[in-house]
Amino acid sequence: MKRVLLCPPTKFDVVYEINPWMHVEIKPERASAMEAYRQLCEHYKALGFEIYELEPQDGLPDQVYTANVGNVKNSTFIRANFKYDQRRRESDFAEDFFETKFDMDAYALPEDVFFEGQGDLLSDGERYFFGWGKRSDRAAIPYLEHVLNTRVIDFELIDPYYYHLDTCFAPLSTDVVVINPRSFTPEGRKRIAREFSTVIEANEADNRVLACNLVCAGKEIVLGKGITEELREKLAKFGYNTHEIDMCEYLKGGGSVKCCTFEF
Ligand code: ARG
Image (cartoon, rainbow, N blue to C red; front, side):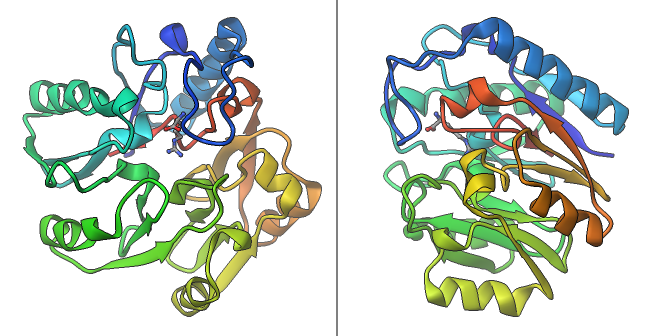
């Protein structure tokens, strides 16, 4: 059974710009963000997920993007070291949550080694995939391999709009992955083709709504509204059903469904 940690958008805002999607003059509408949040929770309940919530804090307008707070391996919470000061405190609240609710121990990378949690570290259940170059540092790899006790398969991210791995890469199973091909180097694309028997490419229109920023459970995919019929059909061909939510308010901060969902 999947557990997810979410954060209601009562304090969600765009008050600084740390990725190319964010413009301080284009504010998210809280009521509409709240409606999307409600729908997200409904889909997750219907899929049988157990939902946990972080309490929104003053001065942390990006806290809604819970995927970034770290990662969990067994009973260890691996804290994020956010690149930008504006988000750094988010890992303290998350650490507190996992300690008090789940009695987890925390693991921290050295302070100057950036690591932005599930945003850049995804698993297909067997392997770990790590994206670096925009937010997380390549130097995080040996620390992650140590705490995960396994190798990570790493990719340099090269497109500034797809600054976290979860904005351009979504392993649906050990065989099938959805990617934005433009985010990867030729070397990276070769590596993806070696690791997965089926690589589904999201096109430009799909990527404008962060189609790869999805949550998958079995054959059910929850993702943002606005994906192309072409992508929907490709997914259907491999047996996947899509559940589409209007995430337009969250796109103003540079995120969609997966960014808002910490899975553990
Ligand atoms: N505004 C947030 C930031 O730039 C968005 C985070 C998106 N999260 C993600 N997992 N891709 O940090």
